[in-house]
Length: 240
Image 1 (tube, rainbow, N blue to C red):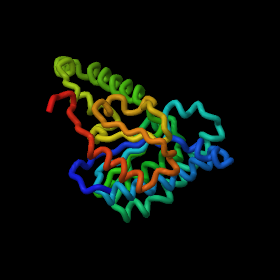
Image 2 (cartoon, rainbow, N blue to C red):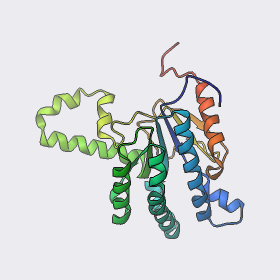
Image 3 (cartoon, one colour):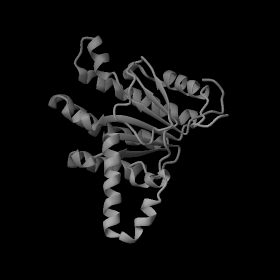
Image 4 (cartoon, rainbow, N blue to C red):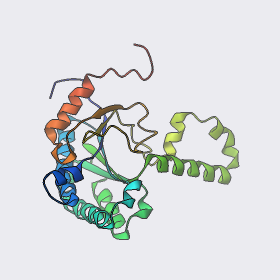
């Protein structure tokens, strides 16, 4: 990796291509999802090694619930198993785990395991690893608007402050409250769309689309993405 000062604080990855990776090898899609876990481990380690402070991964969208029942069931079981197995490594690497999304759709056992893993790693400071599970950008904005509506009904005296709110004030209603917006969003597998992901938070993110399928995206590719980010000129709509 190049020696540079342009290190992103928050890298986010849309992990795509597991199914295609498996199909190219004559296997069922679930084998690609299983291999993708190795890429999660590799990128988490690379983030710690390079000094990235936040790494977020789009693991399962609201729309993914419409996939075949067998595949969804496997993904949920894999998530449950992985969370239980990864805690010791997260602790040894100083990684704090956060899981965000429409968790009411998850099973009680998975939610209980998530809560336990987050509690066990809450004191870690080397890296915050955010897993977006049952998440979509539109859902996030909608649930934030609902929170504002409830707040206004319960506290009508706050009407003026809500009407005068700047965009930054809206951040606290999103599930990512307290987490910096992603500097870099990477999507693997060659697809060039954001698929309803971090619609608000990604407003000024740099995007990188790579043809590499997620199970093949490891430390080398992660560092290459950081190098590409360092070459970007972020202007936020301004003239430099």
